[in-house]
Figure 1: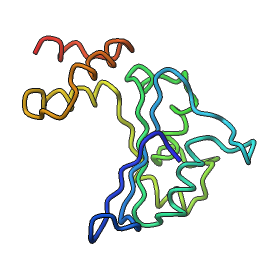
Figure 2: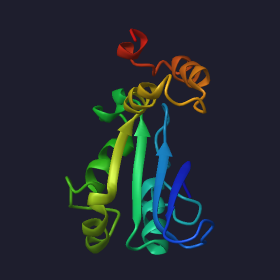
Figure 3: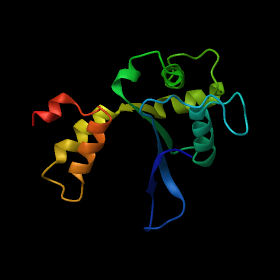
Figure 4: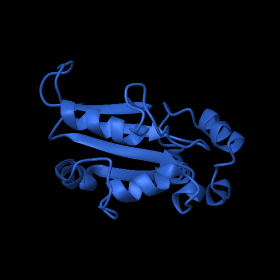
Length: 151
């Protein structure tokens, strides 16, 4: 359904029915797909949101993760779609008015740089996080924030 998904269960461990689900769609330089396998006029984010709210009507959340340069740019389709789905642009939405009203507060947008800043605050405190691998991952993609390098 998306690149990563967190599920929150109410009850015993291993319960098959999650109380809430957070789906993450992660992009480095690519844009979203503007059509899907079964619908030529359905974009990738709308498809994920549609599936999510149909499966988890009261507990679905969506987060797009991109580089900060694209969050403030208009060079990607997802820039327009995220503004629309977060309720900033209501005309001509891919989602119904009812779905848009329900989901707009449950749609978020993070940057890779924001995530690095949060993750690396735990360096030295959490032994099970592979910080060297994460640092290499971010540096290879030129996403490693300068302020973290000075720590």
